[in-house]
Amino acid sequence: MPNGFLVFMLPIPFPIYYAMADPLKGIVAQISTATVSFLGADARLVGNTIHMDSIPLQLHVHETCSGIRTILSFLALGILVAILFLESFAQRALLVTFSIVMAFVVNVVRVTLIAVLAFFVSPDVGLDFHSHGWILVTPVGIISTIVFGEYLRCRSNKTTTPQVVESTVSEV
Image 1 (cartoon, helix red, strand yellow):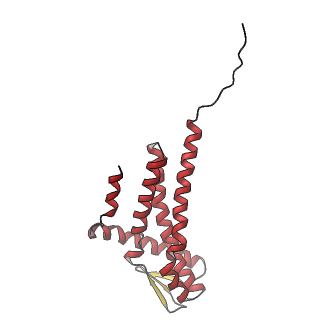
Image 2 (image 1 turned 90 degrees about the horizontal axis):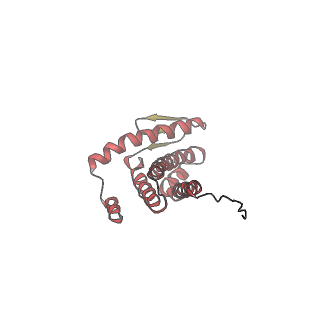
C-alpha cells in the first residue's frame, strides 16, 4: 500500500493537466469575482481575468491558480489519514472527498483574498499576498482535513464500542 503513494511523484501529463486546469480556473475566477463584487468592489470577469476599474490592476487567473497542485496535495493527505485512521470504506471515501473539496475552497479563498486585498487595501498588498498567501490559507485546509478525519474516527469508535450492560445477579 505505501508504494501506491509513489503515484503522487509522477507529473500529470499536459493534456490531462490542462483538461482539468481550464475548467477549474474558470470556476475559481467566477466565484472570486462574485465574492469580491458582493463585498463592494467593482469587479468584473472577462475570460479568466478579474478587472477592477477603480484600481490599475488586472488579476489573471492562470493555470497555476486552478488549484490542481493543492488538490493533489490534499488528496494525498486525505488518503493517508483515511488509510491510517479510518476503517470503513464509506468514511474513507467521505474524508478523501472532503479533502478535495477543502483544497478547492482553500484555493478559491486564496484568489479571493488577493482581489480583496488589492481592492480594499492596495494593489501591492494584494500582489504580496499572491506570493505568500498560501502560507496563511493552506494550513487552515490541512488542519480542517485532519480534524474532520479525527471526527470521523471518533464517531466510528462511538458506534462500534460495545455498550456495557449492568445486570444484577441473584443468588439461588
